[in-house]
Length: 298
Image (cartoon, rainbow, N blue to C red; front, side, top):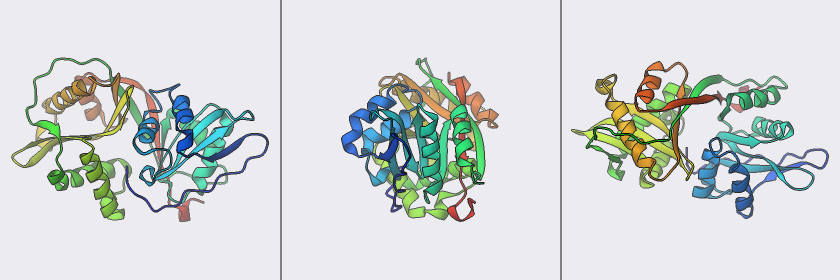
């Protein structure tokens, strides 16, 4: 997800009345993080990326926008780009973010809570625009460590293991979205994987030169660590190996955060069962929108 992008951000959207939306820069960092801190269990990705990259960075693969009321108080914050994320107190802010997403040529995915996605779609689909695919996902999390039989090979990935990680991570992305990132952006995808490995955010279990387990830390805050790209090799599925790896990794992460969470497709009952074995509990539904390319949005 984190990669250098040459896509230019959409221009600010001029709104009527006293409310306005404008791009954010690093001078707004404290104000934005304070706004997002009101709901840390939902804004963890934006908060983490702002801490990692700042508000104005090509690594965000998009532009952060703020929506303010007549007194200049933030009523909404959004990252509009390859992955679109938002937090909004006012429906007018959601409408503005939906309009910006429509005009952003690099917009690929929108992710939020089910109810907020429904509100977002009510604005985004005006004029006939429709997402290519909508996936319902369960947000599951764990907040308390537990005893587990240690998987000795579980550790952070090394740079020389990039080519073991890349095809597996690409496959997990394809399984979810129907798009293989190695087909559309092979060099950028490898660069993003390499950067995450260099940050110590890819965990693997490798035995006899084969990848048995993988999980990526996408965002990391004192309140929430968010995982994705979880993989268990075919020979270890259904025997508790994945649950042991997840429990061990989660125990480690809970030493520095209050909660570890992940999203799992509603139809993937096997994965849900494995996460429950690892002590994860369902919290709420999220929706992921996969958008059409600009030429076919209307």
